[in-house]
Length: 316
Image (tube, rainbow, N blue to C red):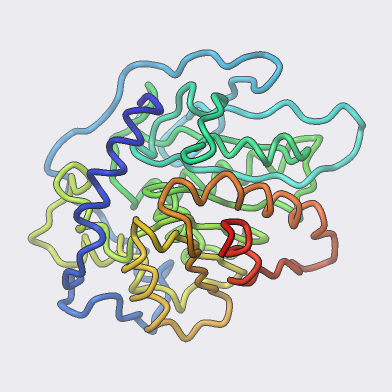
């Protein structure tokens, strides 16, 4: 999906997501006390259509990325892996999940957009952080069928294992990030596993049924299908630091507020950013996060982010 198409899709998705609708249980965003990993165990999704993209992703520029394949529960999946600094050192790394069709990758992963809508997250690789854009099941010519926020969690975790095994990567400093639909998937993944040092979820929703039919290829008559894909229900499951960020001007800010009001897990931090919207939040904030990741060199994650420092990025 092209960058322009992703932006347009984002605007369409936002129309529905900024309106509060009851979650699958009729209680918006109310967290469950159990573990999402345990709740998912043994569950078999029922898909009502076969969504997959047969076209392979475009070849990336050699100076920025190389095309790789990583093993996942769905088979061998394709990804872009950034070129690591040639200094012989171990570097922090981040798995980044794109917005829009978050199962697929394209030239938007290396094409820098304007400051008000730069979805490339290029600040990370420019700061010397090894970056991986995984395509997921059913996307970019990959095997499997798109499950929309269920089996894809396993693909993201498999990507993290692949990334941690790279010679240039410090396996103790692997992070996760994503924007919009990618932010929703990143949040769900952090609720399933604590394997990431920290997770940065930009503009997620608390309930994926708010995305509409395009992102619900599963049997919506079974409430458990939606419940296991609703990050607002599983906030108590996050075991490592999670930062949920969204601009207050436009976007999924209602979901952020809903989740913040119900969350009692100290690992999850909610950061509404004044002066930013769903897209303009990305460029300045990813630059700040890249600096914090490079400085995060202790045995455990010491990243701290305040609303004030984020608001200052936008003159607020």
